[in-house]
Image 1: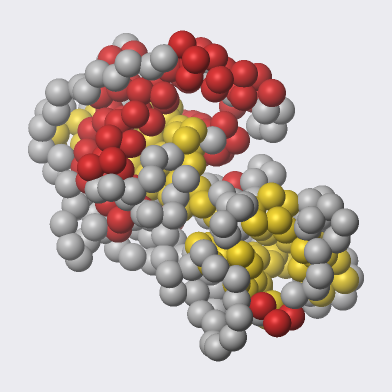
Image 2: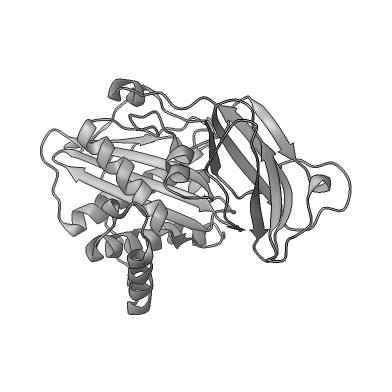
Length: 329
């Protein structure tokens, strides 16, 4: 693994999804950008934070929310420069990011997997998330204890994001993730432990309202996932991929893996526009599934800007708007 010394620490950036390799380093500290967070924004996100009950042990305090809103403004400055829609902060994704950041800093690993072998879409789905997630990850290591003031945390997070944005083709996977046109939310997580700092960006494509559906089913059990795309988006297709349940990983193994795939090679079911059921009385369209083998099934739902009329279907230019994982027992 290549390392480039930065002052008294090393900053290591890990690739996002789709198995695209990308690696970048920053040689020097950049000036911390200052942003003004309105009271209304602060109150809005504090209220969301209090209402979210999932992963409560990784809930942010008021200071952390303020730090993340500053980083959100920094990320949106990058997106505005590239003329793509701004993203909002997703509280559940923040907690998922907090969890992996803490585990990584305390256990000395860096990357997209945890010690249970779970990738970003596993971790978000197992926490109750349904949107599609694309992760950027960064690690900062020092031979000494790292300073831990609020301004220092701002600096570490901004350095990581700036390094993502400084990437150049063809090794610009993080940058592409930061400015992807379809992302509309992001979760941010960080953790500092002695000389170990970890930072995660969980970009989301969140365009579907889901009705109730089971997260665990029996083999050969038929079930449906009710979906309602947001206004202006239309169902295009759904693809289900099979995989075995994740296996435990050592820290050394995680550190060697610089990328992760967003699907497997075992597609087991697809639902195309002409396969759709009619909407129910609540406006949801049920997507029917039946899985045979025990293991995990990752369901990707693609949306289009216009309703399907005729012709072939493909995923190019479509919004991948789900990251549902079903466990078959």
